Image (tube, rainbow, N blue to C red; front, side, top):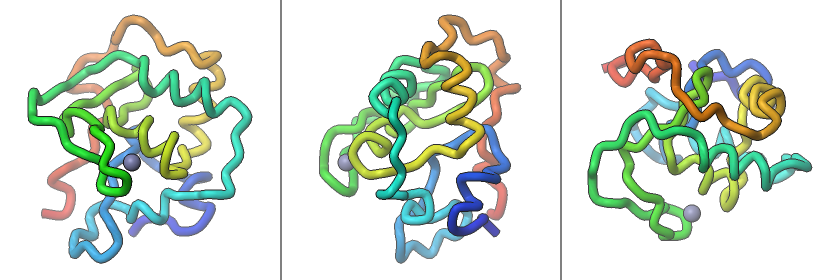
Length: 140
Ligand SMILES: [Zn+2]
């Protein structure tokens, strides 16, 4: 159901990004993390990109206990925390996976961030319900 290979980056159809399952999971609702990983991806402005992802406005936090990265065990914060730049929506842990574990962003998300000159908007002008939330009930 998800695109494979490079297509998943070139033709990602959503405006949310950063939800995946781990290889071996029975949950087929989300793409596999390994499908979104590209260790050959070289992006010159990656440092700025990570800063952008980290500094965008938080639009939701759950107040949950922090969780640890399943790959390196670093504290990655509240698992119910989401950030947005009015167009894209991502979990707060995404920056960690981009920085440490070769998660590659969809082309359109990357272009949008570059167009914003790596400076996220200071205000969220999109209503909470109008943010591009993933459909968590999609295949239940
Ligand atoms: Zn990690």
